Image (tube, rainbow, N blue to C red; front, top):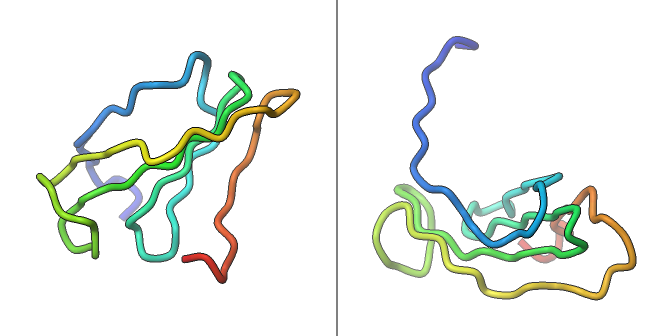
Length: 83
């Protein structure tokens, strides 16, 4: 249903500029975000129904910040072999 209601369960903070892309890995245990601040953030998450590392439902922990890009990072995707 296109009119389905959505509920915000978490707000991730860290990027210094607008986030350009957010993507889940195939098992929905990792989230990657990228931004105009020239970084990619990799998040561990615990959501109901996934294989997360534990913690409270809706918890997100930054595992790594990938920096050193020379410009805005506008897209991020997980490689199929690195679910």
